[in-house]
Length: 156
Length: 156
DNA sequence: GTAAAGGTACTCGGATAGAATATGTCCGAGTGGTGTGGG
DNA sequence: CCCACACCACTCGGACATATTCTATCCGAGTACCTTTAC
Image 1 (cartoon, rainbow over the protein chains, first blue to last red):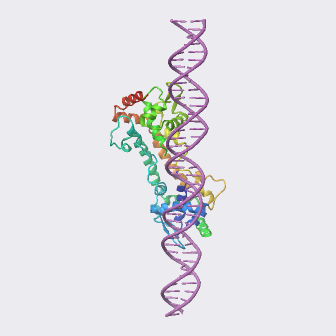
Image 2 (image 1 turned 30 degrees about the vertical axis):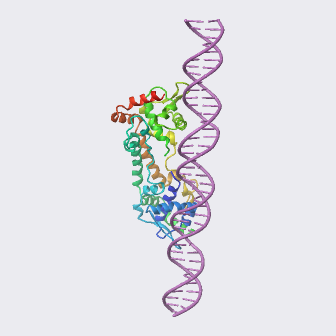
Image 3 (image 1 turned 45 degrees about the horizontal axis):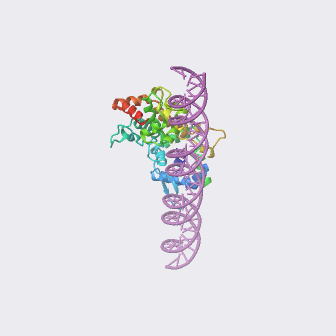
């Protein structure tokens, strides 16, 4: 699974503590990440409707919706794409007893099982939002929001 | 997810219908797969203890255990490796408020959530065995075992 | 006729190329702020 | 003193290299069978 997912998750959490746009350079410096590549990931989040971007001075990225309306699945899907983990290539169609025109992505028992596991995975991720994680972090580290805001203005 | 997983799944099912060793060339011809590359995947299954291999004439691969003792997770893990889907690189250690020596793979809330989803996925895959899939296939296509055996001896 | 020995064909196993994807970088288009000059 | 205009610095966005992983292939080591030969 792509590295950018971790960057996107933490960046979204940090943005949930801020109300003004933050440029890529600042967000990258926060975790010492390559700025241009982080920008690439943030673009994907914008395309997915999770972030909004503004150009020019005082511009940057901010959350497009409330943290409670952004699930971890939304972020993962934005970075990794909508394809499921297991991709069925229908090799059954090359075997014996094949019937032309059968969609083995639906009928193959293995594809069904793998799809079921995929769904369980997605259900877990869809059930947790950025707000949930934020509440958990604030409970265990009450100073986190203030620290984050301070570091952001320091890096600005 | 790697292509070889699908090959390994279907090959294990086919082997569950056979009691004699089957060489790579025959198994590959079954689905028109590149023989040498399929061999590579089967080697991984042998290392995982799912298959046993015998060299020489009349040699090949056969299941090492009963089909009911081989879960889909076993096969996926053998091909893809034991790492979990989401790999936490602990970028938090580069952020503010970091404490030296903290293992963020354990304490980071995102890592925990991703691990939970990973576990749900694995639980699903661990709950289905080759025997389960075989029973399902035999129920829907009673001719499948005989067809498979016939095709194998034909390709031998 | 039987048994042993040598040869042969077959199979796995790991070492070796090529292709696709992920990672990382760069520069141009657009935008808002700022300073300046005129009314 | 106020307003309009032009300039400039800043930021995003997509186009362009590099690295790593997945895909695919090839050749050598080992093994069982078969043939041959000696007893």
